[in-house]
Structures are given as structure tokens and as C-alpha cells.
Amino acid sequence: MMEAMDINKIISEIIPPDDYQHRNGFSNEQLIDNLSDVEIFKVETELITMLQKKPDMLIVETLGYMKSEKSLPVLYELLESLNDEMAKIITATSIFEINQDQKMIEKSKASFKTIKDKFQLISAFHYLIRMQDSEISKLIQEHTTNSDYLISYNAKQVLGIS
Image (spheres, rainbow, N blue to C red):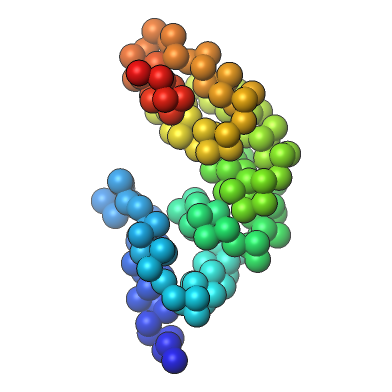
């Protein structure tokens, strides 16, 4: 039987502090893949509770990766409350990964079209491509000839064009 301390330790490893030092380049997928069914259930429940208290895009992404159907009501509610377009894309992508809701493609495209910041644009490519939608691929394709090398390069990378 897992004790409360164990679940807190697991959560702290899966969701490190929300700062650059702890999250830059961080991936929790291997940690999640190594959890038992009991641990997954407890982690999922705790992550949903945490998300209800404070929006955190790593929690959103983690629930998407876990294919957490139980989190969908909270994720949909969060999506409607967000003002940041990049956060909307991350949340919509996570919802799509769970249930393939086609409305998330439209929401993501609308948010993507408003992004002007170069680095957010590049990040958005990596989220949007997960939806494997031809219209999204066309939107990204438009950036393969961008005069900014980083934008062009990353658009080509996510599309598999060298």
C-alpha cells in the first residue's frame, strides 16, 4: 500500500517547481511510463486537484500524456478561462490527445493565427503537429519559407522536411 508521502514524492518528481531552472528541457514521460496502475490513479487524481487550484501547463500536458479522461471537465473549463494563446494551444492539444475532439483543432488554429512572438510560434509548431491534421500542417507549412531562419527551420523540422 502506498503511503501519502510516496505520492507526494512522485508528484514532486513529475511536476517540478514552475521555474526555468527546474523545467527547461524537462520531460516527465519516462517517470509516468514507469508508474504502476495504482500510482497512475493516485497521481491522476492529485494532478486534477492541483490543476483546479492553479493553472499549470506542465500538469495540463501531463494529463494529456496520461490520456486522463477523468481530467476532461477540468481541462475544458480551464481552456475557456485562459487568455494566453499559447496556453490555449497547449490545453487544446492535451484535450485532443485524450479524446480527439475535433473542435480543439479549430481552437488551436485560431490561437495560432494570433501569435506574433517568434519563440511562442516555434513552440506552437511542436504542440500543433501532435494533432496530425492537414489544415494545421498547411499553417505550419506557410512558415517554412519565413525569412527568420529559426522559424523556417523549426517549421520544417516538425513537418519532417530537411
